[in-house]
Amino acid sequence: MSRKLNRRSVLKGLGVTGMAGLAGCMGNGDNNGGATDTPTDSGGGGATATPTDSMGRTLRQGVLLPLTGDLGSLGQPIRDGAILPAAQLEGETSFTIDIQQEDTETNPQAGISGANTLINNGYPAITGPASSGVNLQVTRNAMIPNSTVGVSPSSTSPAVTTLDDDDYIFRTCPSDALQGRVIAQVGAESLGNSTAATMYVNNSYGQALSQSFAGAFEERGGSVSQQVAFQKEQSSYSSQLETALNGSPDMLVVIGYPASGVQLFRDYYSDFASGEDIVVTDGLIANDLPDDVDNDMGNVTGTAPKASGPGREAFDSLYQDEYGRAPGVFNAQAYDATAVSLLANIYAGENSGTAIRDNMRRAANPDGEEFGPDSLAEAFETAAAGDEVNYQGASSSVNFDENGDMAAVSYGIYAIEDRDFVETDSVQFGG
Image (cartoon, rainbow, N blue to C red; front, side):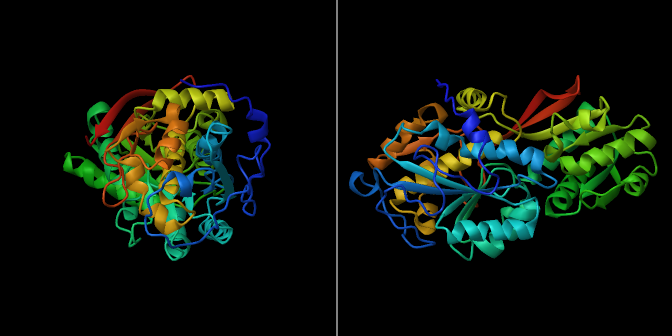
């Protein structure tokens, strides 16, 4: 099902803002790898690939994820998932895969700058960005105006669904409109709580998820006394905790990122812990969080989109072999985002954002022979021959709806055991 790639030291040595060539498989933005195609920012129109105009050329893919900043500890493993298809396929297909990566720094302006670098260097499709606070600004200010396809593995804001994007923006993760319902179900049914408060990072991700949870919890008969915003990476969160916990709610929902979460939970366990349940969302599902906080965090439950696609087992094996560790949250979604983008590029027959956009659903949705992470090289050659491919992903079956969202997704429910997040249950949405 998988093979030992034995290039772990090479991947770990790559810089955080760009990739040099990996034995002709990954190049920088100026290296066309001997291909005859010319990169463009837009154009095309969904040309059908044929053996004569597609095989043997260079496929360009950008990766724009947070390698530093508040989300850096989660962003680096997500990046590893995003670049894995190129490492996996080195020498296995007739194509050269040219990947350049840029760091959003978990900051919208840095994200826009990184996106413009990729676009100017001729990358027509981008895996990323990660956080919704960055993704929404980057897509509106860089990707959509430049006819560039964006596929986020982890931008979960409901606002992504309704973007005026001319169908250039996709994602392999679900909307927080669903995660709010999951948190409400966990809080009311599994934990037996009837009152709650939220603390959320003050951006589109935090605001939307807090509101989604509050609405779903109140529909179940619960009440939400406070929804308290906080800024990223502050030296203290004591005043926000005091406000949120005023009135002694049964449950506190915390929506944020690891770098901020460490200080927030240090403050909580130092001065505020009084037996309430805490639920954290995907942005805080990091196994080093309890150690960084220096607490077993036994009262914490987590919810996060789950990798449960037909290709999950194969992906897990590939990721473990390449990086020497098990994949984490959104790693499979990042792999699928890159894999589908590359397949669409093959069908497009050129490095054109418009042509790739017009072939995204052809590469992913039902109709055609099924391929997954363990048969990605065969999927490339099948697409290059002009035959239909139905990509079955690691995170899900990867079927895009009319908004570029996933048609079916799963969520994992996590407990902290021995200072690690351990999945204890799951919830499925869609067919």
